Length: 271
Image 1 (cartoon, rainbow, N blue to C red):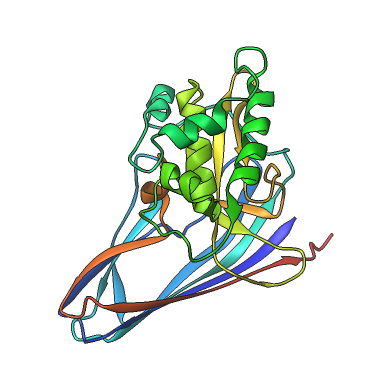
Image 2 (cartoon, rainbow, N blue to C red; image 1 turned 60 degrees about the vertical axis):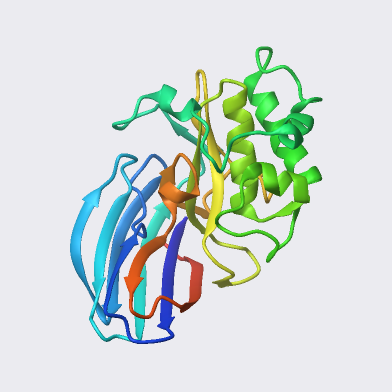
């Protein structure tokens, strides 16, 4: 499937900034089942300072905001070819050892509520894949999808306690529970083309778990499926903080209004 993506982010500062740096993880990964045909980023009132691949092989761009700017616009666009691999990414690769994905973070660490959620799941040793599918279903049942109830600092345990969350929270709960059962897991941010619209609500998030014999396997907990050709992987990490599309610091105008527009549509492939 060929997907055309346009992603525009606008920062509006309450006052002109004296100095600001933004870290962008907005370049899709070239991985199994995903080919980047073209990708570009354009900036208004900002310029690129540095580009590098981080420890998770996320292509990262540091941009400096022009002093005195009151707004910044970042526009990404390109075309991606995707394949249907039933959510299987394959063997582990990269700088980080597989065991590092067993360590909990502040956002994934289980507490009493998460342990209650895991209590009736099937045994991991018998069939890890069955356990992971059951875990995904349990999260969807116990933590309903609701926007505006959580934020980027909400932990998996807090989301389970509240019984509501968004895709980011679902992924954190899944990752924390998988790691608690000795299954390496990681966070994924990217794009999802919804079938009924071109303009999407925002970027999307899901999780991947490492299953013996298969390698990394994706689970979109919020939608109850494994990623298919409508998904584009952009960044991965131990949790949201490693894979956040945009993070940064600013001085002199720290109050900001952020708006995001994401359009994803299928394009016909010429034979």
